[in-house]
Amino acid sequence: MHIQSIDRVDDISPPDFREHYLLPSKPIVIRNLAHQWDAIHKWTWQYFKNLVGEVSVPVYNNTRAGAKVPVNGGDGFMNFGEYIDLISKGPSEWRIFLFNLFKYAPQLKNDFTFPEQYMKGFLKSYPMLFVGGAGSIAHMHYDIDLAHIFHTQFIGRKRVLLLENNQSELIYKMPATVESAASFVNWQEELDYEHFPALQHAKAYTIILEHGDTLFMPSAYWHHMQYMDSGFAMSLRAMPAGVSGKLNALYHILGMRGFNNMLIKLAPEWWYNYKRKVAHKNATKAMKQMQAVA
Image (tube, rainbow, N blue to C red; front, top):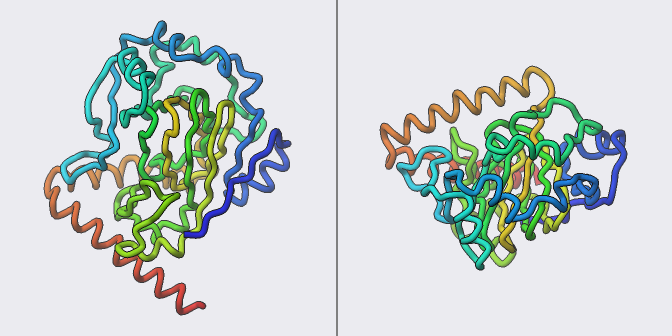
């Protein structure tokens, strides 16, 4: 796999952001975007425990979903306060994603601002929290709503691997899903090129996010995230511009996800194996096309 670092800047003007990152669909990390927020110092484990410690939340482990697990199906439930205590003690594979903390503590929205100087269309009712113990992993996928994302890291560090959506076939995208059949666990050390040879041709970006960093992740970017420390981040989401982009997002959310979940329910083992078979077939075809051009 060909990997390059994501650009990192302290600040960037809106015109430069649009010209060099938004329009060409390229990621960037902006160090100081969140530094004027109250949240950057105010949001701590104890603060969250005091606000929403009794809220029950779905938790996810590092095991990839089996044949009978629906899209976004959780692996269990835990009170948020108990979960924070667990991951604060040391490494833990348990994580929480797409948690709308602001539903239970709407006053938290006063602690940050949406970066509307860079784009419009933010889903202001749905800022989402992502929390994980050291060693927990969000496996390779792209977000089903196709949103542009400003992902700000608070406590802890996170290693990020990104790929543009045009790399889908080379990383074994499974049909009717936003998931890859390949594993990217410990990708920085080795990848399984024997079983997934097309990965050698994929082009990716990487960076380690630290406290206060904001990653701009363009619409439909593949991402694999590993929590190096126990920590949390918040994503602010903006819908893709134009009618076609919004219709594609609607198809992903209502049509594609519904079709996938229906087959998981009706024929789980067949569908599980079929998706992986098609992913390999498409990857092989993509490699042959690259070789023919070369």
